[in-house]
Amino acid sequence: LLHAQIEYHACNYSQALKLLAELLPKVEALPKQKELVRAMTDHNVALVLLQLGQAAPATLMMHKTLTFLTSSKDLEGNNERSQLVGKCRDNLLLASLLSSGGNF
Image (cartoon, rainbow, N blue to C red; front, side, top):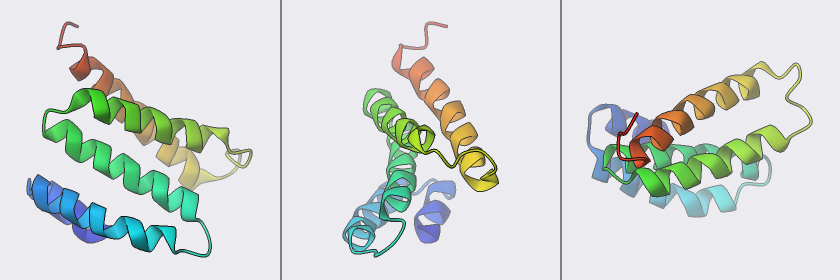
Protein backbone atom coordinates (compact mmCIF):
# COMPACT_ATOMS: atom_id res chain seq x y z
CA LEU A 1 0.00 0.00 0.00
CA LEU A 2 2.84 2.36 0.85
CA HIS A 3 4.60 1.66 -2.44
CA ALA A 4 1.40 2.49 -4.32
CA GLN A 5 1.11 5.75 -2.38
CA ILE A 6 4.69 6.65 -3.25
CA GLU A 7 3.96 6.04 -6.94
CA TYR A 8 0.78 8.12 -6.65
CA HIS A 9 2.62 11.07 -5.14
CA ALA A 10 5.27 10.75 -7.86
CA CYS A 11 2.42 11.06 -10.42
CA ASN A 12 3.05 7.51 -11.67
CA TYR A 13 -0.68 6.78 -11.67
CA SER A 14 -0.63 3.71 -13.90
CA GLN A 15 2.05 2.10 -11.70
CA ALA A 16 0.08 2.99 -8.55
CA LEU A 17 -3.06 1.39 -10.03
CA LYS A 18 -1.08 -1.71 -10.99
CA LEU A 19 0.33 -2.06 -7.46
CA LEU A 20 -3.12 -1.61 -5.91
CA ALA A 21 -4.55 -4.27 -8.23
CA GLU A 22 -1.76 -6.66 -7.22
CA LEU A 23 -2.55 -5.96 -3.57
CA LEU A 24 -6.23 -6.99 -3.75
CA PRO A 25 -5.70 -10.79 -3.65
CA LYS A 26 -3.42 -10.34 -0.64
CA VAL A 27 -6.07 -8.23 1.10
CA GLU A 28 -8.67 -10.94 0.56
CA ALA A 29 -6.36 -13.44 2.27
CA LEU A 30 -5.98 -11.37 5.44
CA PRO A 31 -7.29 -13.07 8.57
CA LYS A 32 -8.20 -9.78 10.33
CA GLN A 33 -9.26 -6.29 9.32
CA LYS A 34 -9.84 -7.43 5.73
CA GLU A 35 -12.81 -5.10 5.25
CA LEU A 36 -10.97 -2.05 6.58
CA VAL A 37 -7.87 -2.67 4.47
CA ARG A 38 -10.08 -3.29 1.43
CA ALA A 39 -11.88 0.02 2.06
CA MET A 40 -8.55 1.84 2.30
CA THR A 41 -7.35 0.17 -0.90
CA ASP A 42 -10.58 1.08 -2.70
CA HIS A 43 -10.18 4.68 -1.54
CA ASN A 44 -6.64 4.77 -2.94
CA VAL A 45 -7.84 3.32 -6.24
CA ALA A 46 -10.49 6.04 -6.33
CA LEU A 47 -7.83 8.71 -5.82
CA VAL A 48 -5.84 7.34 -8.75
CA LEU A 49 -8.96 7.22 -10.93
CA LEU A 50 -9.69 10.81 -9.99
CA GLN A 51 -6.22 11.85 -11.16
CA LEU A 52 -6.79 9.96 -14.40
CA GLY A 53 -9.94 11.99 -15.07
CA GLN A 54 -12.36 9.22 -14.09
CA ALA A 55 -14.34 11.27 -11.56
CA ALA A 56 -17.63 9.33 -11.77
CA PRO A 57 -16.18 5.90 -10.87
CA ALA A 58 -13.95 7.55 -8.26
CA THR A 59 -17.02 9.14 -6.68
CA LEU A 60 -18.80 5.78 -6.48
CA MET A 61 -15.81 4.08 -4.89
CA MET A 62 -15.33 6.88 -2.37
CA HIS A 63 -19.01 6.80 -1.47
CA LYS A 64 -18.77 3.04 -0.91
CA THR A 65 -15.71 3.51 1.31
CA LEU A 66 -17.33 6.30 3.29
CA THR A 67 -20.46 4.19 3.81
CA PHE A 68 -18.34 1.34 5.13
CA LEU A 69 -16.30 3.56 7.43
CA THR A 70 -19.31 5.35 8.90
CA SER A 71 -21.37 2.18 9.34
CA SER A 72 -19.05 1.02 12.10
CA LYS A 73 -20.23 1.47 15.66
CA ASP A 74 -16.70 2.01 16.93
CA LEU A 75 -16.16 5.46 15.39
CA GLU A 76 -16.50 7.16 18.77
CA GLY A 77 -13.10 7.29 20.38
CA ASN A 78 -11.38 5.72 17.37
CA ASN A 79 -9.16 8.57 16.24
CA GLU A 80 -7.59 6.74 13.28
CA ARG A 81 -10.93 5.73 11.80
CA SER A 82 -12.35 9.21 12.41
CA GLN A 83 -9.41 10.68 10.48
CA LEU A 84 -10.06 8.26 7.62
CA VAL A 85 -13.71 9.32 7.54
CA GLY A 86 -12.72 13.00 7.38
CA LYS A 87 -10.22 12.39 4.60
CA CYS A 88 -12.71 10.29 2.64
CA ARG A 89 -15.43 12.95 2.99
CA ASP A 90 -13.06 15.63 1.68
CA ASN A 91 -12.03 13.46 -1.27
CA LEU A 92 -15.64 12.51 -2.01
CA LEU A 93 -16.59 16.19 -2.14
CA LEU A 94 -13.73 16.88 -4.54
CA ALA A 95 -14.66 13.91 -6.75
CA SER A 96 -18.32 14.95 -6.75
CA LEU A 97 -17.41 18.46 -7.83
CA LEU A 98 -15.16 17.16 -10.59
CA SER A 99 -17.71 14.63 -11.83
CA SER A 100 -20.31 17.41 -12.13
CA GLY A 101 -18.22 18.85 -14.94
CA GLY A 102 -16.67 21.53 -12.83
CA ASN A 103 -19.86 23.60 -12.76
CA PHE A 104 -19.39 24.97 -9.29
